[in-house]
Length: 407
Ligand code: AMP
Image 1 (cartoon, rainbow, N blue to C red):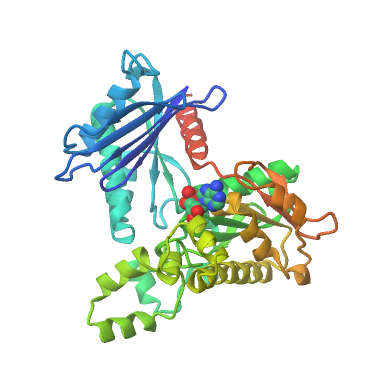
Image 2: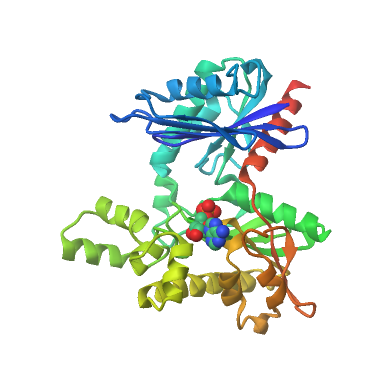
């Protein structure tokens, strides 16, 4: 079965076509500037080679973007499928399933309603995800569709981990609570880590460090998420590429009052202009921050130190919350590639029995990244690197649900 994976943003649409026979990626594309006044852009790679780099006109809607995607995949000259009947199902990445959705589901009008109902909790993403679903349905009306939610894996958290200390009525009335994000990655990586170690996930206390442009950590006990660092929105947690991470909410009021800006502008600053880029003044990209830090740039050094310190604190907190930890796993752009950062995070963690094998850790850096154990033989805690693959996780869920439904 060939599965199309769609990740729709407010003005973009990313897609991948995967042949589930061998889980081989056939095509990958990005359509940008949908619905914008300027010209759009459609780039498509088939078999790893760029076959399309189109920027010749406006893209008016997500429906038009879906038509362009299908046209590229079925193109007579460079396409990889004859016609769209070869696409067995579409898996949609969706940000927010609220409290209602705890796992991936076949898309029905009820599921679309849940995505719509949760627009207030993920305004930019959920609205766009829904547009992507509706556009795909318009051009592929007979193809089954599945929604895979970023929040679903974290729905096993107990109330003591997901509640905020504001009056209970805000939870009842507005559903204010921690939801957590990157759930598809945390689920994929925690499951794969147990397989890789040849262990039953039920026996493991694990801390998953998903460190990328957006970063989140989760505590996974017995295969179930018991806590995670992102909150009602992806803003909470460690400092990220452009996000501030957790802080005293009074900081917001203080800056708003002092600078005469409103809370929306302030949140925009917290989401887009804070974190690594805000502190370093250099970049949101960890590679640039690293380079600047190694050249002695004080603010880049501080940004790097803040990230490392934040990760350490979450690891300590989650180990305490689970009464120990068996495995610490690093994943995503920074977690997989940046051995210096892993070394600095794991420095002085021997108090909890975690000891890195520095040589093994150094061997595992871009472009030599693969699944590996990087802890010392006498470390009580296994430390490893497991590359994440959210697309494959979405494709697997989609295939499983569609096959089960057709039985
Ligand atoms: P992600 O959001 O998972 O794509 O991760 C993006 C982050 O990963 C950026 O901060 C990059 O600096 C970092 N990253 C990606 N590739 C590498 C690499 N080869 N070496 C070091 N850091 C990398």
